[in-house]
Length: 436
Image (cartoon, rainbow, N blue to C red; front, side, top):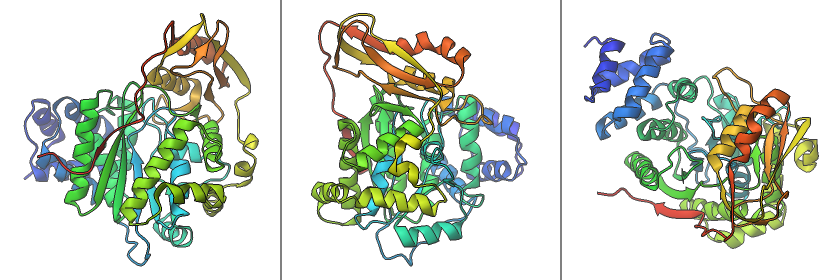
């Protein structure tokens, strides 16, 4: 049957079901450049409002997956386990986590993404390491994985090209927060890796793509279902993103904090999440030892050495991991201070993430470059006691005009009260089966 983009956009706009062959035509036409960005953006917005049912989502995900090359690592004898986050503010967990797990004998063929909206991206952070190349062909991908148990790459030209195009388009068109679009994007990448198991970190709260717990739960259940239906043992952990994770938000500064974790010197929240996730990944790989093994791998230096070795394999300069003061820092420094004394009752992840992006740590437009030196270093988070004038954050920026425009907005992320707030756990729920 012959379709036109306008007819299909109108079909979804009106809440009707897209036929399987229509979905396949849409994805193929967009991948091949026949369908222009503006029409796919309209379709994405229609999906944001009207969604995709189970059959549509399965077809959409399969069409994305089949738009490019599916990797085969069957010759590598180790269990192939990966992890993916739906994105948060200060969420650098992949960077200390996967070298730690790889050093424990798990193969991690990680395909990561760039920042989406106010959330940071693993690739942007890694590229703050001078020379680090995240775009590699499949031959080099296989070679690095076989030698080091770990790859930290983006999508090549041949790997899920439909998702690579749509991912960037969603970031620039306000169509990020959609369960089917998020689920199909993440799972098409992960299914292309030939995995044995997958850990999903589904964020919820102010700084997450899905702000309500029920939406995050639905996303987690959707992705776990896709994984299981495709023969990949999949576990999702729903984690809190009401405030930034760790003390650093940006790119270079999040690499510094990641290295600190691998030295056993990281902040408590990032360290706890890293170890908890590592336990699940070892479980999926069938490897005993759990947290004790992970902690021993950090203490021995093997985890940090794994990151150094993989950085070198990707063309990066490992000296900046040995001395993180050499990583880029923007030249100007601003301070956000407490206007009164008391306890921090709010440290809003969304406001901080948006502020960091507008200062240059993320993208406003699809074609924008990321400034790796821009970042926010938190000095006070939920429950901390402060006095008037105490620093709440140190901000490194490059553009004075941008800082003048963002300073007050960033300052509004903090609220101070007379009583300490009730805090919640970092890991809220585990989803490892679909709900019937």
